Image 1 (cartoon, one colour):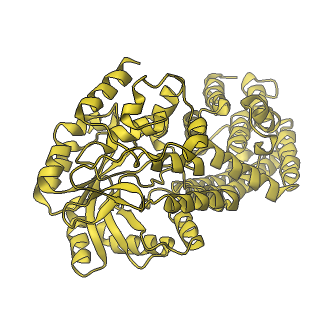
Image 2: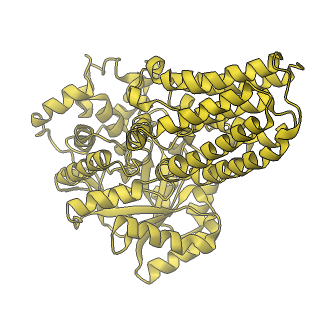
Length: 219
Length: 305
């Protein structure tokens, strides 16, 4: 059995062409516009929450992230992506589960936040800024059409990046429950983009590495 | 001598009258060389149409229409066999869209697969596939990648006996599980086997292709271009000076002619999203085919590149 698995390459698991995938993203973006702006406003609320020690602000951030995961699951994974990738029925279930876990996380935001000047908190905010502001510009360096831009709340990758940043920045418990799905998604997405030979594959890899690096930082 | 696919497609209007070399068990259907399905004698053109990746376009109407144009060109060029699987995403509805547009040609040879480990769901999956295609029944149903083959095959043989299928087969790809394939070929009355075979992946020449001839099993060849990798690898290299002896005028035809010139091969199924490429592929089944001596020369040339 090991010998058989050794015959597979990354490309063997890719069941659609890059052209089909990025056209799907472009059509999705065009259909949603200007709804992306709503999520940008929501993301700003998340960022604001990380800048305060307020429990309500952290709870609002968790709720915003929960809505973002639900929206990605429903609108992108289930209604769009699953038309070319049957595995996305499992992806949808995982995203729905993460949405529920983030709602539960509201209960866990009553613990004291990390100190505002801690390296981990500043790093988490950096990861959020990366997910919010850098991700939409990835097509420019990957040589794709700007219409294939990925933004928080509508596409999984930046949503996972912002979520990981927010969790490591200001949630001090239950991380073992909340981190696996975003991290696994980033790994899946990075491998998919790598199989498509898309330059943007480095982004989810960076998100994974940054998250683990921040988790190792004590303060 | 560097020949691009595009240049060849432009030149397809000329040079189609090359002498046809008659070979055993071969005939011409709609101008394409064909080989008989051993157990029935039904002739199949040597080049068919695969759909892995290329026809998985979701609900993108522009891309669905591009695939419909490929299907139309395939039948205009004399093609018959289209091969698909429930594993191929939206490829089945895309085929249905293309076939509906040209009114379901009578000479369609529909090749599908059953791909489910829980065999109690096999019949429902086949029915769902049939609805996607919009055909009354499939000509060929294959057990995809040998998934639960020992349980699927009795059900497929039963469907064949009751007229709900015409042929039964099994598939594998990329050289996997060849011993199991041999076991099934030796012990089960299958009509078709689908395997990977191309100028660089020739493991099946040792045992499976001779066994297919011995057991009178038709052979479908997948991944003739290693999913386009062989074309990309060789397209900048010159074709040999003696390429005219093979009947090929491009790398795609050179690679296809190597495959379909093996006497055990019934049909190769290259996949494409382009009308010019499907025409170029079909042209490989016209003209002449290399003999054994020339096939060895083709192999040596490619391996030296």
